[in-house]
Every structure is written in C-alpha cells, then in structure tokens.
Image (tube, rainbow, N blue to C red; front, top):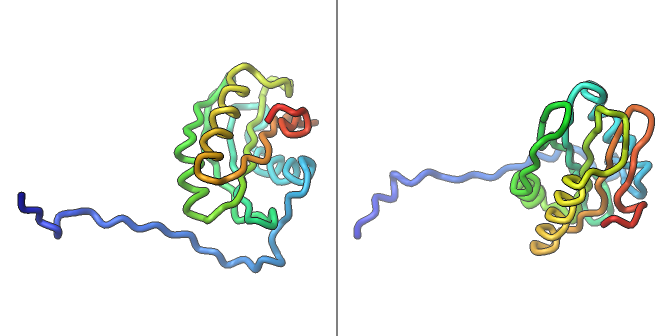
Length: 150
C-alpha cells in the first residue's frame, strides 16, 4: 500500500508561557483555589453552570486556567479528554477543577460524584493528580478534598 505523506495533516501542540514562576499564583489549600475560581465564575454564578480547570506544576504554581464546559441551569457535560489533553499539553503535575451551582447549594450531586471519580481515575492512569473539585456559589464553596470525597 502506498501512502502519500504530503496529504497527512500535521499536528502541532503549543503552550506559550510568558509568566515567571515566581509570579504565578500558588494553590496550597481549597481557599486558594476558591479565590481563583470565584473570579473565573463571576459572570455566571447564578445564571448557568460552568466548569473550569486549573493546571498546576509540581510546586502547585498555576500554569493556567481553562473553561472546559458551559451548561444550563441544571447541569453541564464534562469531557475528561478535554481536561487531560490540556494537562498533558502544559506538562501539568496536578489539576483542580471547579463548577458553580446556580441554585446556591454546595451539596455535591450524584453526577458530581461520578464525574469526580472518573476524572480522578483517568488522571491516575497518566500520572497526574486531581487535587480537588470545588462546587462554588456566590457566598461559599465545598471542597471534595476537604470533605474526604476524593
């Protein structure tokens, strides 16, 4: 079988990092993460669900943040592949995710628990640590790590 190699699409992967390590935010606790995610969720907190992921290096310094899902009032779809491909692209050592509950409750739903478990398992397979999943509201948050749910 003859293959015309000039008709194969080229794949490029890029990550442009222009922030000095010493200038990066550090995530040492769920409170640190909640401050980052509260800013990210400020425009959607009571309107619809959004999921963000923060990618961290080995020193828990933030490599970047990405919006990974936008949904409606009652939920959103999270594709772990989107999160993991970004983590691999930026050479992340760990990930923290968060989503908001427009209802104002921070109690994890069954779906929240399932998504978290699947993401933690997928991360483990490729050697990345899921350090937390936060559920955000305007006034407070729940941390899966703090609650022993990871």
